[in-house]
Image 1 (cartoon, rainbow, N blue to C red):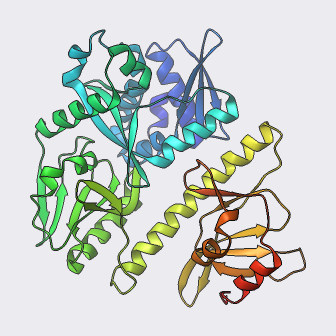
Image 2 (image 1 turned 30 degrees about the vertical axis):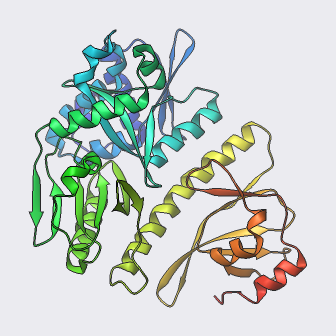
Length: 404
């Protein structure tokens, strides 16, 4: 069965990987390509030398979402993106300058590339980026009509330009591009250009400040083609924004983040409304679901890293608990075990296999034994624990225990 026969139905992940490998070779890619089914990615080598890897999850989601009659064009676009390395960068920075753009990523994608490189001993791309809140990152790309290439620090060093200087140029270029802003109802704004840079336009603060919103600007960026902005004091606008964001996250490929950010001065910060806000419960549930998925992916990668390097470290899972119709995330902290704890709403401390769990809120855990929670560089955040709380600390925590 040929590639275009497969386009008539939704292929399995394995079939999609084979289709893409064949399409890459047909397009002239001479690299050796090995399919890693467990991690759903392609491992690349060039004459025996490591040439990186291609994560397939987003490409597969994108391919399955488009109508069947457009899948051949979609596959061709994916191939062009994968082969962007074949089109060399200009030797001179001034020649590249007009085509620099910022691009928004889910921070989890960058973290997964880093962890995968530790499993395979392959270097992860050293991309130049800066964070936007806790869950997003802005990278630099060289954007041409036929391909978009992410820029590494090595690329910028070759041009003798700093990441800050290049990012400022990219930001200016993006501001000078034509784009469209629509208004839904009285107070929900949306960037609707459809050029894969709509979400990135959240960094154009002069544009955001022109929006007439009630309170501080609140933005949601469900994927690269959606920038939604309303006001922190606008319940109707917030409800409409949540409805649209949830629909996009369910139906559209390449998700970024379901979590809102707030413009404070010149900086976007993570935002959650107060408990009494009508949208609080929905937003908290979206946050819990998002982090539940990301922690699950992260645990799988960390377990493989520890297995590869012969390290005996307990990577705690995130569990979902329900109480009176509300959902809580929870993790187990076992005694006498070197562990990596996720930041969950509740933590179950286990003194032994026959002991009942001591369930406490994360905030209480930090207040009582914060010195035992050693920060790591992982995202989503994990804390290394080498010592279990003392009996006196446990007694304090028992007085703050949560009933489940």
